[in-house]
Image (cartoon, rainbow, N blue to C red; front, side, top):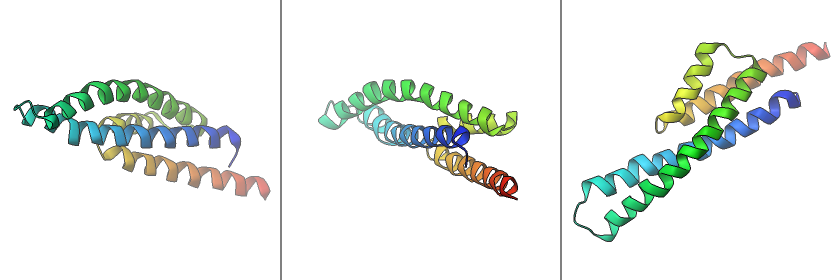
Length: 120
């Protein structure tokens, strides 16, 4: 695989993993602790902390994820629907991991074909 695609792919995979994990913690841990417990316990305070700080971190890191995914889409010459699905899947807990797997598989399949045809 050429460095023109390998570097954006690596950046995308790292950011997709970070954003996916933060989104799961935020939505499946922080939000329930914050809003389902209203007794002022330390668990509710943990939920407050998670939603406040991890929420902000996720928002900033999601912008970097969008850039990495868009960069990869341009280098890999994806069509607009595939790019849009990949970008939007970063907003859905757990689905972002499926999208990362799907995008990685597509890039590896397409660019291993290019490498094989260039050698022939």
